[in-house]
Every structure is written in structure tokens, then in C-alpha cells.
Amino acid sequence: MATTSDRDIPASATMRGALVRPTRDVVVEQRPVPAPEPEQVLVRSSLVGICGSDTHALAGHHPFLDSDYAPGHEAVGVVAALGASVSGLTVGQRVLLKPNVACGQCLNCLADRSNACERLSWIGCDVSRHWAGALAEYFVAPEQNLFPVPDHVDDATAVLVECLATPVHAVRIAGDLTGARVVVLGAGTIGVLAVVAAARAGADRVVVTDMDQGKLDRAVRVGAAAGVSACAADVDNQLRSALGGPADVVLDCVASQGSLNQAVGLLRRAGTVLVVGVPAREATLPMPVVQDWEIRVQGCAAYTEADVAAALAIATDGGIPTAEIVSRTVPLDDVAAAFAAATADSSGKVLIDPRQ
Image (cartoon, rainbow, N blue to C red; front, side):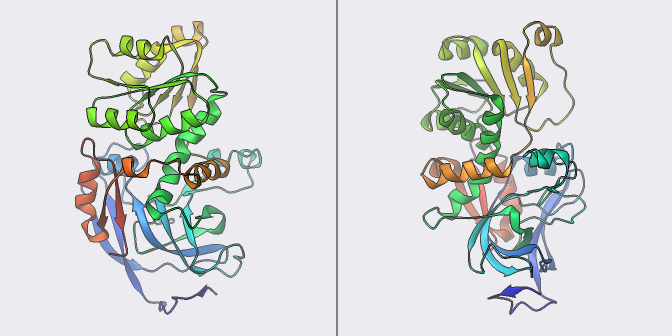
């Protein structure tokens, strides 16, 4: 049985929710309001971000989201109902979503690596549609996947915590960045937040590259030492010049064949490249250099509970440049137009308000 203040919601109630149909379109459909199981929470969505993984999936470029799914994994909302076993949250409480659901029992979970859970599943990135996403009027999540939002952190900032947790995780597993020279390839939302995360981790200089000048300008405004056009013929030389030498660490938020080759070429001996972006296809690496220079190539898969908590702490003390990142907020019924806007150059983060 669920406890709720607005479960005046009858068992037969329906709601609006988005559905991504890869290579075709994104639509709003009617579906049942989900009922929380004993250890789950029903959340009424307040704001939901459109992720690059969603726009890539819609275009048919995501390696794992290749059939219809209910999106929405960047979300903040209000607790509407509690499953019978939930004790740490209250109805009416504001929460943000950590969408990767871990089993808590496998070898990696027990080693505090829940992002690498052997049975990992994703709210809002699930083609089985077992975990429907938050891009709907309501969604359900396990209690442990919801983090209370401090009163002074607004909804638009809270939505970005999940985005920030990805580069927070990447810089953590990169090792000690104190005094490091860091390159960020790609200045979308994750790239811009990678600048924030690297600076927080103690990097001395962070330089960013992108094809879009508007994105580069934004990266500089939030703390990058320089932004270099990826279209420049001498881009690598410009990056090294801006850094004052080769990079210690490269955060590849593009993850293409070209960016991976570039990342390895920018590093000093024994440097590290973090593959942060989701590759659309297989790629090769210059293995003679990787071996001879002892280059570390590290995959980065989302985040753990500790990374989300660290990102939330940055948000709590005002460290997320929300005004620089969020470009617009639109109603749920305009989801198709919102996805189109989210793919545009210099678009920033597009948010959807499912209450409208």
C-alpha cells in the first residue's frame, strides 16, 4: 500500500509521458500512472532534462537505445507516494533522481562501484520499458535512487546534478588532478560541467575544444583557461600552447575515432585519457603509442552514489553555473520541438516541465 497526499489518484488513472521511437520521432502518449512497489517511491516530475544520449538515440546513433523507450533520466520532482517499506522520504519532499539502478549485491556493488553493477539497469534508458523515465507526469524509482534536494537549490540546478555527476566521476577515477593540465574535448553540457569538475578537483589549467564558438565562449565563462576551435588546422598546437605543454589528462566527451586519436596525441608520457562520451560505434587506438608511452585509456560509466552526493554538494554551495547551461524550459506537449532544439548548435540544456 502507498501513502500519499495526492493519491486521490485512482488506480485506473492515466498520465502523459514521452516515448522515443529511434530513427522516427518522439511523441507524447497516455499511459497508466505507475504504482510504487514496497521499496519504491512515486514522484511527480517537476523538471526533466533532455540528454545528448536521448537525441543520439532518436537519431539512431546510440549503441544501446535502439528501440522504443520512455525517456527521462535527468529529473527533479516531488514525492507523491511511498511504497510500504519506504522510511527515509516523506510525501511532498523534493528529490532528484540517480537513474542507474544497482543490485547492491554483486562484486562491484560491494566494492562501492555500483555504476559497474553486474545487473545494472537504467530509469529512462530502458528499451524493455520496465523502468519508464521521468519525462512524464509521474515516475517511480527505488528509494535509494532518490536524493533530497536542499530548499535553497532551485529545480533547474537540481536537474543538472545528474549531469555534473558524470564528470565528477571521471575526474575522480582519473586520479589526483592537483596542478594538472587538462583538455576537455567537446563543450556540450557534459564538457562544460567537466570544466567545473576538473577545477574543483584541483586542475591548474583546463582547455576546451569544440566546433561551435558559442559553446567555447560558454566554457571560458565558466572557468576554462581557453577555448580552441576544433576546426582549426593547428588545433593540437593551440591546445598545447594554451596549456603550457602536453596534457596530463584528456576528458573525451565526444568519443569518436578522431577525438580518441587526438586525445592520445595530446598527452604526455604516462598520461590518461578518460572516455566520457558514449561512442556511436567501435573505434581503434594508436596502440604502439599507448604501449610505449604507457598511456592509460579509461572508460567512464556514469557515476556512483558518492559521485552524485559530491555533485549535489557542489550545487549546494552554488558551484553549478545554471544560467550558463539551461537555455529554455518547455511544456511536455512540446517534446518534439524540445528535442529538435536540444540538437541545435549552442543550444544549451533544454528542460521540460511535465506539469505544463
